[in-house]
Image 1 (spheres, rainbow, N blue to C red):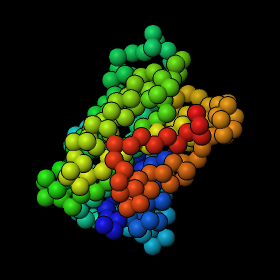
Image 2 (cartoon, rainbow, N blue to C red):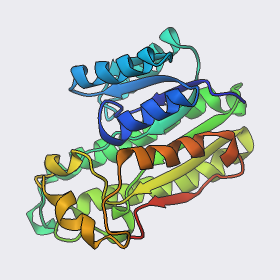
Image 3 (cartoon, helix red, strand yellow):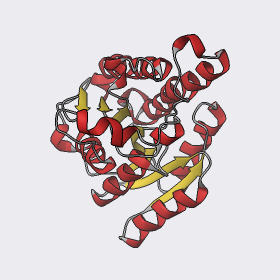
Image 4 (cartoon, one colour):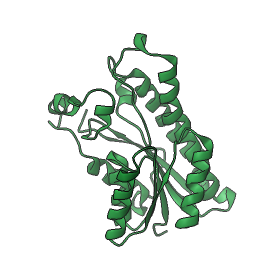
Length: 249
């Protein structure tokens, strides 16, 4: 089927913004969510519209059920029925060992990275699954190579949350495979975005990039290309897949 309306969570910056732009270039109408930076979200929407595409932005904290419901409703009102999802929104805490973590921090990481992904997947399946009268469609979850590396000494809680995302992708893929919904997971490695600064390590890309087997960090656009491929018909027989975009790391 031709591209339809794609909801991209966390679409105002980094991998989410690159995915929104790349998906629009591939023919999708894009609804993106953002939590705080309305200006950055508006810039992404403006770029898409200036290039001849359709886009909108909705403020949403994906860990809040009503925000997720409102984001899907806003997308449908403005652009039409949602027929694709990229669950990209995610957070990381400051660099810390497990014995330094607080319950509040772990709860917040899990709420955004795990609960948020599940809520968005639930709403997407309710709209897309043939069991619910939908046309089918693709879901891509943005995880992290941290899910298999563990991120010791940095943020094991984030890595654990991404391990849950991997499992969500595999389990949901098998659950809805016969209902026209494909679910796949992309696991970025060291990617040059500002998430590292938000984790208190603005030098992380420069420090770790050269140690990657390919000798460099990746770009948000390289991850976005993988996401958009999984959304498209060329990946029509892919579901339950875990695709590493990590330079061999």
